[in-house]
Image (cartoon, rainbow, N blue to C red):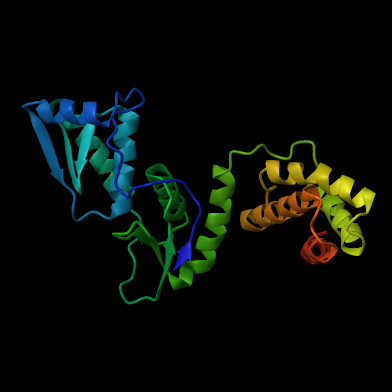
Length: 256
């Protein structure tokens, strides 16, 4: 089972009422207090299809309450909801082959909007998938490479850091490589220390450039930041500094 990064989520669609949602409890009271309300039993739907439906209703500003897999709405919104139901069913993704070998990705921390967006991306790629009862992503083993590529792309899309506009990614990594190579040989090299302190925030503060694996970029940023922190402490022994710098040098050597 694999861990994927993301933000908090309880696995169920949000109890929301649109962009001006007054709050979950207010929406629930409003819908449930209406004498004329409808319940849609959607237990046979895949979890991601219910998430798609929830997003469609959010766009339409339809107040709703989810009770497990049952959707409750005002009767006055029946036409809007029926249209959204048809659209969600039409967008349903290819189904998994029950006999095929599966790969499970644990999506703890993903929000409902992230699940929906990634499900739509996999659907456009024709990748059969579903989110199980633990909200983990299940795909066929034969699609693993396609899913890994989609994850890299998706993580870049979600990344809120600015792009490296006006900056050369290769030049940046070359600068970090040269600084680490200096520090590998002499952890107190003034030029190496100055360059790594200057370049580390740029690497950490920007999203990965197009075509660069998000996980690798973030790992470089994390390890570079840790090296800077050790240098800032001032009392880290030379052996530790040299080893950290050497590790980064070898990793960067394959990239520049």
